[in-house]
Image (cartoon, rainbow, N blue to C red; front, side):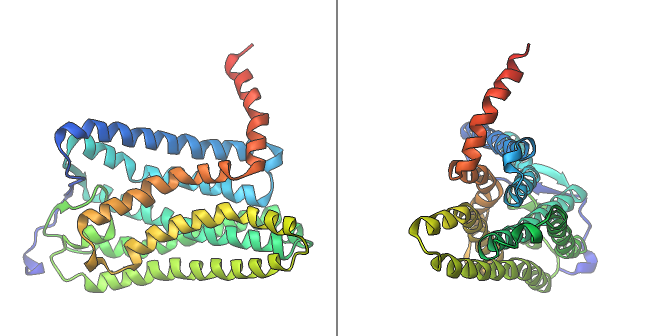
Length: 314
């Protein structure tokens, strides 16, 4: 189609999932329950880190930042998913669509950088224990967290702004939220160059942090293997296990969608994978950090009676 003859679309249509109408209420309730559990779990971690002095270490500071990020990350897409469950194909204005695209990718790339920062924190704690407190001061941890947010929101400007300049001739987005690949399929022109730029930006952000994380964990592994006793090695590994699980969940889904070849996947596959990284991963993160962490479970035992007392009142 000639790009000069296209008509600018003021809105898009989110197709959502193709399921029988009788199953939509059940899918809506299930998604809503998962969403509320995700919000409450991550909010619980944020509050717990703030109110208990036992969790005032750098590691828990970054866990709290990650949970705060997940609150926004899951809220960027799930409300539109809930809307499509209720209404089926749903209209969304072009402006809101591009804002959603930008916010979702900003938070995703921020999480990518934050996971690298958390790996650096574990590396310093295990490989430089005598200098850890001097290196990871309150000012430094705030600077590192802020740098992760600035880097994520800056990098996402490139794909979002390029996408907004494309001419669109079609309106129906084969997804439940506005993402890069489904939107590029609606363009009047060949979006191959845009896809390469998007892949380069996202690939550099995720790839560099992925290499950094595994490089740091390589150093951690060498340091742990030099420890004299098996008990000390197990304790050192236990402080990293939760973070390694979160990294694996995040990167497995991100690489599948944004780094792997899109031509080998159907549109329905993209939507199903999106449910993993946009809904299930934020739900699992607080579970991983609480169920696998003795310190957090100990704090929960201490704080729970105080919360019950406050709820009961005088």
